[in-house]
Image 1 (cartoon, one colour):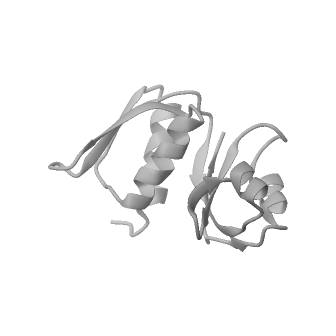
Image 2: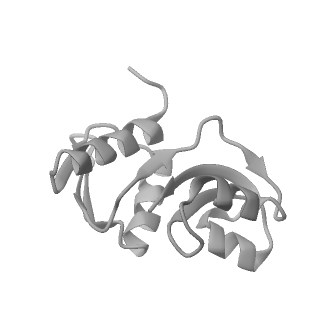
Length: 126
């Protein structure tokens, strides 16, 4: 069993998308994963998700998503380096989202650039 809940969950989502499935059940759960799913829902990468606390699982419906991956190792980036990582992981200028963990919580790379803050690159999707 892996120790990275986020990487495992994003791999499950990506594999289900490649297999043509619309619904995914993730049997692992963490607060970080829930925050990532909130951002993915805001960006319409997933349509909806439901957390089952008793079963410790999440059921979600995939939306407009081509790729989603966790960034390993988790690079820390200054406010000036956000653009460098955006170019490294995202395929085009206005396509995709980097998720960055800052001292103000998780946010997209656009929000981090607007606030002028850096952090730790967690994942990306497009």
